[in-house]
Amino acid sequence: MGCGGTGQKARIANADQETAVRTTLSALALTVALSGPLVAQEARLSGTAAEVFGTQIVVATPEGRVLVTLPEGTAAPAPGARITVAGQRSGQTLTATSLAETGPARPLPAGAAADPASLPAELAALGPIEVLRRGETGRRGHEDKLYLRLADGGWMKAEVRGGRLVEAKAEAGLPAALVSAMLPVGIADDAPLRDMTSITEIDLDDDRPIEVKGLSGDGARIEVKVSRGGGLVAFERKRDDRRGPTGTAASERLAGLGYTDVAILARGGRHVEAVATNPYGERVEVRLSDRGAVDRERMLMR
Image (cartoon, rainbow, N blue to C red):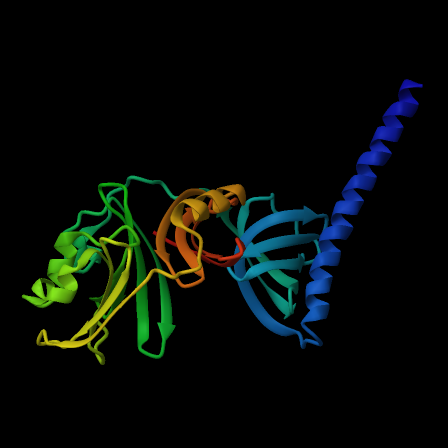
């Protein structure tokens, strides 16, 4: 009877595994079907081996989960390994012709001092204790998105173009020293800016007036535009009607989804941006919608 019980348990375990495989494959197949007919194209992607099913694996990438069929004779990577694959991709499936492991997933070490020589002077002066970054190329050319953890534990986000700081934002408020360094002399003394108890964003885009956003003591949102010479161009004061979750609610929701080390960067109209460590141990920028869903995740590098 003992042998029969062992055999039955093995059959149940195998059945459970087969069910899990079918469920995962069916979900990915449905994603492809809903997207309509697709033409296979040569593609290359990097991500984390999230699940392994014999000769197929699910790779978690910043753009979503992709089902990958391994090259013939290639051993499957262990779950959690960082990999790069290339091959023919059709929607959310890829038939790989090559696979390379770039290392196991692991969180970036915290608390390591950033190299000040790699930062604009205004940011280096803040003495950040951790800097994460990602590159982005748009209509204005290449930009570096920087995520800085400051000595007090707070986080801020900055954009650098051509070595020049062009934007900075922090939900908890930008450091006073940075505000003084970014704004022309005298602007902070103007009445609209004096009403701000917290300046949360400064945009120094070359082809527009300087934009400054912040909050008043009564919680109203204030947006000011000033010329490069300091003249007031526009002023708006309105109630804080953002529908995105509060910082506390967003942190709790992300924690429930498996994210750790969550730090809120900014609240939008219907979303929250944060920096966190995802369930695979990677440092990422993540955007949480007002419905509590992660609708974007981008990998960050040191």
